[in-house]
Image (cartoon, rainbow, N blue to C red):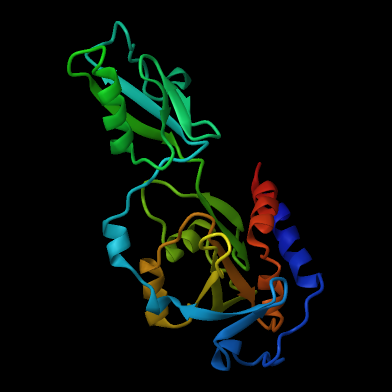
Length: 265
């Protein structure tokens, strides 16, 4: 998988895209010293870069709730009705129900239930209400067994570029880099770490940056939480054509499809 991801990064560096006006061919200092904007010629827009220190959000961490999506696999347990809903080994495959591409999951007596967009508690309440039509006070439990619907991508000069599935525990920038076995100590520009985030369809993307050489920014990386389909990109030291690489991430949906295929085993 590492070779596949590394290949796309090499491809991005050498596919055509010119420097934008105002960007300087310097290698002895970070381009962030001179500019806080990036021109993306693939979408013909200039985007303001946002320092992660302006966006750290403890509220998000403290109020985070995972929402089920298509492809997630869940386990539904109904206690006290073992003759109808047998309880076997919780990890057994026969207990796992996959959320289909339309966001639905089937459960006996409840029928086809919309799971996408719901928390585990919300889906439990929905199933409880449906089963209450047939059983007295059913005790229902819902657990996500396998988190497959949401992911972030860590690319560039990290030890192991990878796709990381988002779970019911929020993932911070520092978590993601740690799971990728850290920055490549020989090639990474620690002062040039980018997070590319697509907002609503048609809106301009958000591009954040972090200077992980700064102790303050390094600490803030633990409070900057990633969202579904975020791309973390670590630039290469001595590389001045950084905007060329980032420009290749757009159109965003096309790139996500490509990188998702490359990072799949």
